[in-house]
Amino acid sequence: MAAVLSRALKLPGKKGSELGEYDPLTQADSEDESEEDDLVLNYPRNGLDSAQEDDDDWREEQCGGSGLRIHGTEEEEKRLRRKNAVRASFFLVPLVCAMLLVLLCAFLIPCQKGALAKRPKWERALGDAGGVTPPALALWDVDGDSVDDVLLSVTEWTNDTHPTQGNKSSAVALSGASGQLLWRKVMRESVLYIQCGLQLNTKPLPVCLLIGKSSIMAVNGTSGKNLWSTLLRNIESQAVLLPDVQGDSVPDLLVATLPADEALDLSLTLISGLTGAKLGQSVSFNLTGQGKLIGPLLHETQQGAHYIVFGLGNRRISLPVIPALRRKDPGWEGLKKTNSSSFIHIFRGSESVEFLLPLVAGFGTYHNNLDTVSNLNTSKSDWVLVYGFSKISVLGQRDVRKRWTFNSAPIHRSPTPGHFNEDGILDLFFQHSANGIMKAQVIDGANGRPLWTAQFVCPRLVLETAAVSTSTGLSAFVFWASEPIGAQKNITKATVTEPVIRKLFLLHPAYPSILMQLATTTDTAVAATVSYEERQKDASYITVSSRPTPDSKAAARIVKSIRLRAAIAQGQVVRLGQSSNSGTALKPDVFELDKFYRHLFFKHQVTGPVARGGPFLAQS
Image (cartoon, rainbow, N blue to C red; front, side):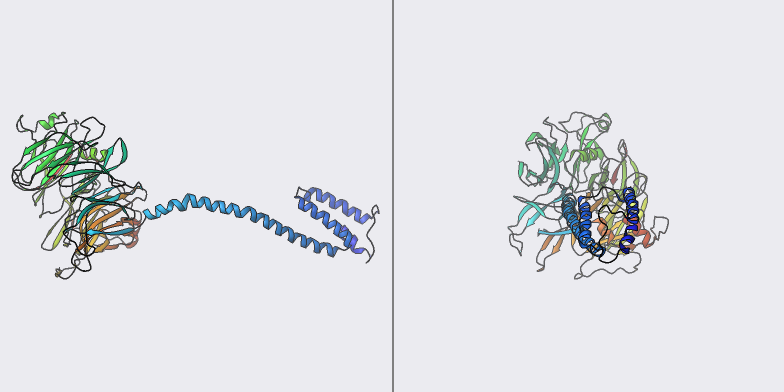
């Protein structure tokens, strides 16, 4: 400050003090400034600042005026700011580009596959519908994206507009994530069954079986290429996965053949899972009953003995010992009528047997694959035996005695096991239709008492209900129906020209008086199943339907997949009022329902028996 004052007092035009000239005011000020600079401002700076100070002193001496020095300093500061900005840009621009590249590699590229996997729904048309006969259908991840793919049989049109007698049968694989065609294999005959999951130690790849009436073909599930094939006559069943019989470390297979003539000699044939070659001689059984073949299925007792469960119509459900597996269970052998008998009769009756399936959560018609883990659990479970049309009974595993009986109207669909209450025992969801009304019921697996009942307009579909395991520990039941009966008093039957509107509903036991309407259609669904996706904690509901073509001279086969969580988010709430068996009239508000379903996730069913020594299930 003193230096500034000293300069200000000098006369205009007078030169400043020469070197060595003593000015007390200036000198005092210089000493103070020096000390202050040393204490406060004298810290290391870049070379540009030092050069800037030298330039300022030089300009001051040459120009002889403080005003010019200030002007030069401002210009220099601007120039330095520009230099610093350029330097910062040269540093920051590559850094930002590198960060964007890392983000692109780490997130955006993998998310292309993830975004595809999160596709809420897809639909694909495949050839001729072939009437309302259910096609061969299986689920298995064959492309390695952790999403189950869809494998099914298709009847293709040789003419794009009209089906002809020259239609070709084929098996196709569709991506479960997008519906894209993965491969197509033309077959010499119609495919009756498709099963996947057979593990060949020599070739670690997904293996699928394509089973026709006279041949079994093993193919690479990823490409559809042949691995082996074998010829049989009058094949009547899916393949049953057995423990390794011939010692090649690959599970073997068993199939049933049944002639079409009246002399019904059922034969069981062993096949090598590695090569497809027949093992030994077929075992024949003389059966004179009428009706469809039940089974065969594998059952493993607590002692580790293996038995084959099968039956025919109204004759019997019997368990003969597999000849290749010599181990026997004394408890089961004690159920034989005579020591010389090769059968263990667990049921005989005058009514026709309709279904026989393991009492296992998640087991369904299109989940009978050949992976070892699920088959071991399934083979150790109790059984659902459906016969007749009016009764459901539970048979104990040890003594084959009835535990409880439930009387019902005629049942035309297989019961679906699922957890409706929290007792840990599988309950049963089933439907029956009469006089244009469909009645859906859930009965308690522990005692046969009704847990839930509702009535609907008949949807004119014969389709199994799907039980989907949820994060609550209970099962959600997904089924087709038409308008619920409750609010409406009069039921009007649709005319011939009116299309039947079918609705897909989801029932969760937490809200028995509420249904979520997921979808509507006028198509005729002939098969349906559920696929799980662990990563998204979600499930997809897959249907195979028949849809008339625009010229109405044929029907196309439509495969459609919808994600349940997305369908629930866009679904419509349908209130049934007080359930006849729920005991309380629950009327949750929209906010409560939205919160519940927003936090509802789906997971794989726990495949396995309910409990050791638990009940068998039979319908009579």
